[in-house]
Length: 423
Image: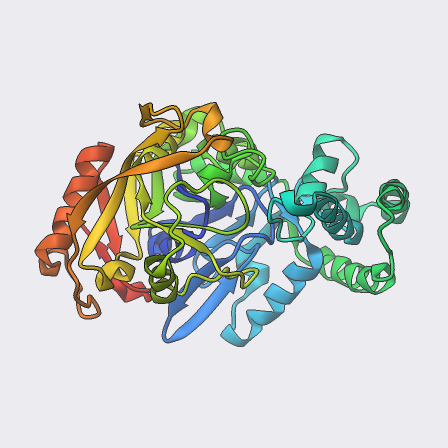
């Protein structure tokens, strides 16, 4: 058996949570492989909206084992709150949630460092969620971080104090106040005691033994491919590998054991935070798109930047991830437009025209070149099959398939589970 991977192809917020929830019945295990509580996966069913930050999106299916993998950076306080929030749904988290002992811990001073670093950048801020993600990955790479397995050690407090002193020195350099630290630590150690009661495992063995035993596993990514630490719009990126390759290192699975790669994209584009966004709309069209799509961050509440679909960026993400199937989300947001624009190329300042995301694209001005397609300009609330799609929406899907050379197997026309059309 091979592990399938599901990931976002844009700048995040593509709708991964909903699709994991829809696909979950076909799998026995759902595993998160990177990122932290800067993720916000939204699921909606039975008229209730759920937002998950660290827990895999298969948690609402009682028959599925949910794994928080080694590539995740975990905030114990947020995890405790998330689990407590699941209580009203009678979810047996002791049965279907496990955590890798190799997952890295976000400690209170990581959040303070995040704020200090961001403040020091002035008007060159990257738009961090200030959840401590970047500083935690820094400590991981710098080999000074704490991991979940460390909380079981009798000298955990000593290890914590060593890391704390290192952080105090850095924060002192930035002249950043520690007023919040005592209160943050109180919540942190209460959460650590709670996390000790969870099922903490060597997840790489569990995943590989499950594959060898014929079980179906879905690896769930966070953020989007264009925020990848290597291949995203650096430095306006996240701190981990958000691609298919990240699923291998984030769960301990060999590349040869990767099966289908499901790539999710919106029928348009959005971005939270700073960084290049060639198709961004600053006019009434962009505002209408934001309002229609309720484009506000599920983790931060920040309004998302909105723009038309960017084909060069999408083709790039498909290439570096080895995408085998595409899922198009939020097609219903385009219901209000009589015409739809799709970016096919960029024109650079020197007049040249390109259709690739080169190294320089992050630093230079690129003007999108658009193709205009007819909109369907009607509601899709009652649509439950592809045959019922208006001709213009079918045309949009066919045009994109032809350009991307990967089949679009699913189209989402609303937030509910039932508004997910399989082709």
